[in-house]
Length: 359
Image (cartoon, rainbow, N blue to C red; front, side, top):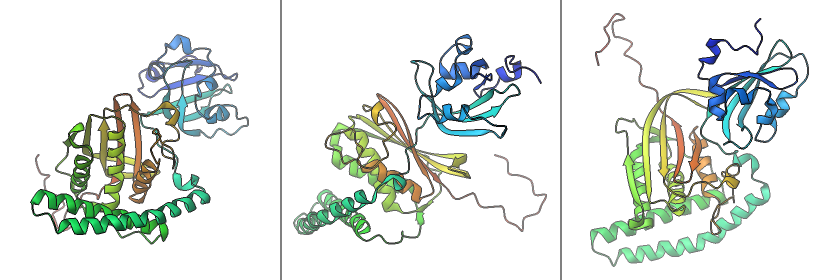
C-alpha cells in the first residue's frame, strides 16, 4: 500500500478535496482541490494539524481524536473548515483510517448553510407565548376585515377594488394562520398548484409594500409542471423571504425558477425538483446570525420579530423540501427546493422496440 504522503496523479487530478494526516494528526499531503478550496498552497498545509481546520463546533476535531480499531468511515455533516484567518468553507466530510493510524479526509463542499430545525429547538414556553400573541392579534385582524368590507362598498374603479380584494385575501390568510396556532388542525391535503401563480401573488404583495423603491424581476422556467402542495402556505413562505430582502435594503429582488435533476433532500434522492431562488442585492446576512438564522425570534433588525425564516423553513419541510441560503454583502440567495412529480412513464402498450423520438 503506498504511503499517504505520496499522492499520485489520479488523486491530484480529482476535483474532490482530499487530504491525509499521519498518526500524530499532522497533514502530510493534500491534492490541489483541497488546497484550492481552502485558499492555501499545498506546501503550507503540510505539517498543519488537521484538527486545527475545524472552525465550527468541534465535531470534526472530536472525530479525528477517536481511538479504537473501528475502520468504518466517519461522516461529519456540514462541517466548517478554515485555514488560519482565511474564509470559512462548508462541507460534508468523510474520514477514513489509513494504514499508519492516520486519517484520510474527503470533503464534499456545499455553498449553502441550512439552519437547525426550529421544531426541535422551540421550547414549550415560547410555543405558549406565540399562542398568546396569536390570540391578541385576532381582534385587530377582525377590525381590518370589517374596514375592508366597508371600503369595498365605496370604491368603484378597478384598481381600488383589486387593492381592497388583496387586503381581504391577506386578512383571511393571516386569520387562518392564527387559528392554526391557537388550535392546530391536520394540514390540508396537497393539491395541484402552479408555482408561478404563487410567485405572482407574492410579487403583487411586494409591489404594494415597496412601491417603486425596489425593482422586482422575474426569471421563470415556463416549462415547469404543476406541484402538489398548499398554495397559501407557499405564498406565506416566499413572501417572508421577499419581505426580508426588501427590509435588508435590496434595490433588486429576482424570483428564479428552474428544474433540477437528481436532487438529494435530506436522505431522499428525487429524480427532479423545483429550485426556487430569491436573489437580492441587500446588505446580506450578518456573520453573528449565520448559525442561528432559522431559529425563532432571531432577527438582524431591532424591530424584527424573527419568525419569518423559521416559518418559511417549516413550510419547506411540510412540502418535503428544504430551505438554505448563501450570502455576502450585495448578493444573498435563498434557495427553496421542492420535489416535483416524476415524468409519466411511457405507455405500457407501446412496442418494446419503438424508436426514440429525435429531439
